[in-house]
Length: 249
Image (spheres, one colour):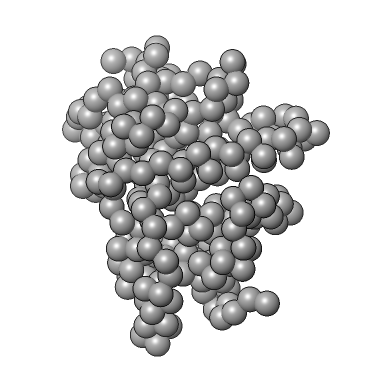
């Protein structure tokens, strides 16, 4: 395997390209269970028929775990938005269509979104009263079984030269309520500093899916709380401001 062509680096992983293969190598201290779960998630999503890079192998390279997938040639939707600002609304519409297509799928063996959120809220270090309120709210929300990406943003979508979209990074995938997934994407846009795009995204998603905006908003404190445990200091402050929002008009 050729490990010379680095295409991306993160604090806990390095991603290489070797011809038509993409090799994601994790740091030695990265949880083996999380790595194997990511590969399993991706294999289960493959079965839905969505356009995603196929898993080609899970192995160890120089004592580090690695996931090998197909390399998808193209540009991310985030790059295209930046390079073609006049087409931003068109790309946003495509982004929402892709997310709706994800939510139209089911994968019964994925972990349940509510179980994951309950666990994350318990790990959030919020006070007991707030945690109780959030657990209660979460339990009262409708139970669905739709595929939820868990981290969908324009950087996780590659558009090939012929216009085919491929969806990357399924490490956070679960099955559950699509509006929780939508709330997560809205908060990701906000944390990226693009509040205007976040607002447009939410309005467009609700229009295309025939979902009440207030319903998605009810998920936001719950989703924000579930993201606190692994957030940076800046993200933590922003997410906490959403946790403390009680009701929406």
